[in-house]
Length: 443
Picture 1: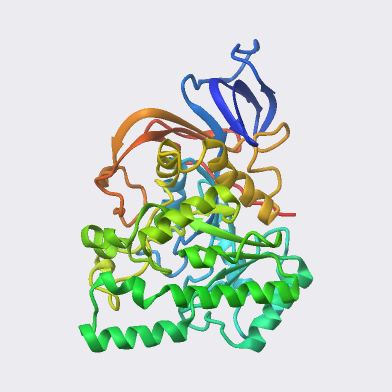
Picture 2: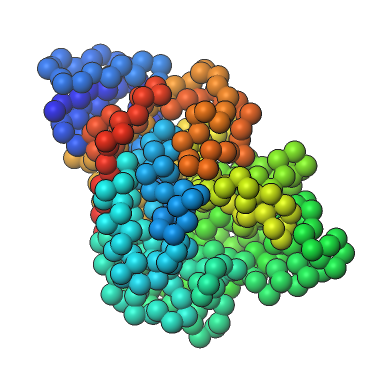
């Protein structure tokens, strides 16, 4: 099957130009850099006039909740949401039930995704204080890296002992596996929570969340991770940076990078008054000063990737304050339109956005044949159109939880078409329910 996408502005590897893409089955075979449409016989012709044509987004940081938490979300529903949002590859986190801390649990996720995932997929195994052998035995061609919770998490996934941390950083360095860390200091958080409860009751108002999960808690843990990575020469990627102070730790070391996620780029602590616990996440949304510093970090090199930390909960779980409301929000369907909104505000260029959301995740984790529009690469493509004002409403939300912190917000960019492995799986509200993604290959 051959497909041509013509008439659009191709955004790829730092450039934007009028051109056409030719796809044969699942791979890009030609890229033409002019406005004329190449002649030929094609099984499918896609007119992208007036649209941007870019690589499909690689979201390196999602929680699909399967297995064990499927009342909130599952692989099918969240990869459908991804496809609607121009996301063609996702990398899932290990804090499911059971946790992905054994090869058996990891293989179970791959088997589930092969039958359920609409887009390409992989899974982070999680490091604990007692499963060091997993790092040594996991297939480096199947996984993006190792996830480490250096802050509060469920069960035994919190690792904050010095000897265990040293062993994990050293083992990842030895195998050449990226180590992705959640950095918050649990001891500081626990002291802050106890103080807040003493002052404000058992469930402090949500406005205190960024002072409980504070700048100091984030900085201390991130500083420790950076120090360990320098000592062991580990390829460290710190997830969801939230503070201006933490950003000062990045930029000097090529093997140490930071991720920003959409929520911390869109919201600040002033938004708790209107959105309440809907924007409660860990680490917390912090000040406008921090948000603006993160936005600057998108272009000055201190932020390397832009993900979502997509984390659905039932709406009932989001009720309450700092102690009771669940932390996390579904964002995978709307991150691309929201970030394109930042390009309209001149926070970053479209070319830099594609670098952060497509190219750099592929570079960081060694993704094979994806993340770029290149001859011979898999045809994972998002086509987005400007000047299409629309509003987030419940009926268009594909995540199983059926809510979004962005409900009622309007955007001027719309994902028109998503192709995954050369196949159109989403087009203007129509979704291919029998589409299945592929296991992502690494290194």
